[in-house]
Length: 121
Length: 110
Image (cartoon, rainbow over all chains, first blue to last red; front, side, top):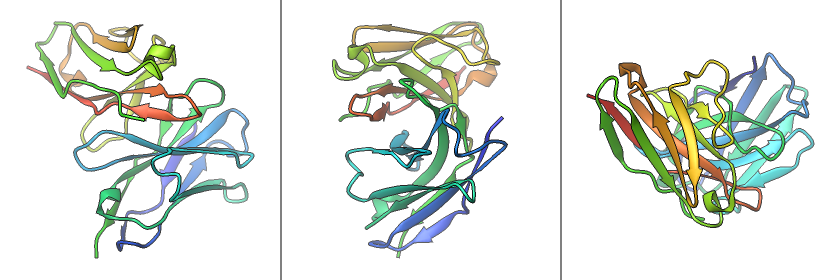
C-alpha cells in the first residue's frame, strides 16, 4: 500500500514562496497508474484542490491558483513538490498530498497526514 | 468554478439513516462527471468512502452508499454509528482537467 508523507510544518512570510515536498514510499513515483496531487484545507473550512502531476511531468492546476503554483516530480528521490508564490494569510492551511488513480476517475484514494503551513510575518 | 454546495451540518441518532446532499451545476455533477465522497475525523486526513458516484473502496462499510440525480449527488449512511461522526466532503470532476470540492458537512451522531 502506497504511503505519502508531507514535509514538516512551516511558517512562511507574506509575499514569499511556500515550498513543500511529498515523499512516496511502498511504491514508485514513476508508476503510470497514478497522478500525484496536492489538496489544502484552511482552518475550519473545506478542501480545495491545488493541482495534480503525472510522472511524465504533465501538470493540471486549479485555475484560481495556477498563476502562483508550480509542481514538479523528482524520480531520484521518489518525491513530488509544490511551490506557491506570493503567499498571503489566505494561504494558511493544512496541505495534503494524495494519489489520484490515472484515468478519468478524479478521486483521491491515498492521502498523507497533512502538514500545516502558516503565513504570518 | 464555484465549490459544490453541501449542508453545513446534519445529525441523526444511532441506528437511523441520514443523507448528505452535494449540489453542483450542469458543468460538473450535472454533466455526469464522477463524484466522490470523503470522511474526515478531527485532525485526520480525509478518507475516500465513495468513488465513481456509487463504488465503495475495499474495507468501507456497506452502510455507506452514493447516488446521483441531475445536478445533485447524495451520500446515505444507514444504521448510524457513533464512529460515523465527522466531516464529509464531496468532490467532482469539473471539466478542463480540474477538480472541485464541496464546503463539507459536519455529521453529528446524537
